[in-house]
Amino acid sequence: MWYDQTQKFCGCATVAVFLSIPGLARAQEAEEHDLHFTHPIFTESVSPDSKVRVDFAREWEEEGNANEIELEAEYGIHHDFSIEVEAPFVFLSPDVGSSESGLGNLEVAFKFANLTFVERGLLLGYGLAFGLPTGDEAGGIGSDHIWEIEPFFNFGVISGNWEIVGWTRFGIPTNQDVGEEVETEFHYDFSTLYHFSPRLQGLVELNGGTGLSGDEAGQGIVTLSPGIKVAPFSGNTDLFIGLGGGFPLGDEELNAHLRAAVFYHF
Image (cartoon, rainbow, N blue to C red; front, side, top):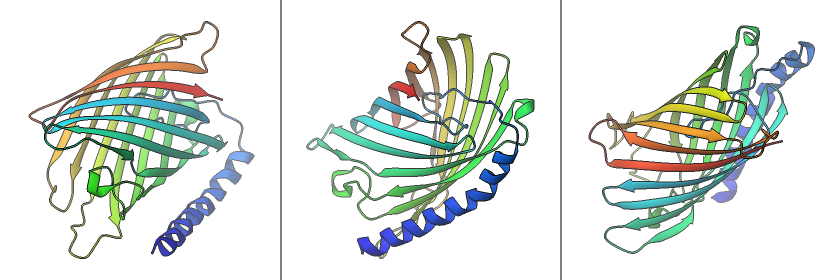
């Protein structure tokens, strides 16, 4: 079964890469443009990039607390295409029952950028992400059999010291067990970031999601997340440290969350 699913994943990934070839060819013929977006804390950046990122996250929920350490690596093959891999390690501390820890679902994403409007400060993007079943469903950490396909679309606008970024994502699960609900999801993320100086950035993010089908259909959550990012070393803006806190808007199961992140660009 794992062999068959791996074949399916590799086939989808191959199709995604081949779809990028016309865009890469056009980009090579076009003049090089420099429209690079800063990475927010809870929202992904629009522009393809080369970076390593480590996140430390804490969530307070009604049924207990959860901690997560996530390693993210992204490599920009070209200025309009990158491949990204995310690996989360989760620690659950429920109010009732034993604590659990383990690797969550790995994610591999193919990010593309449309350079048509970069001279106007606008970058459009799209891509496809794949969630791999490397979690432990019995322990409440991810899934051990569901493969998720997540197409996404995004945009980014730069005007002076301001950066505005928006994302929409559609989660589509596959390989469910017999009788298991098909729970599709819609997620959206918005970030407004301001450069106070080359070494100091402030931002406010709005992140939400809602179920489209299955048991969670019509149910969702929205959080407002202010944050700050600082380059700790003078003259070096390749390394940034960020801290953000998220607060739910409305009566939500998630009480609050906190995220610290280290970004290194190369």
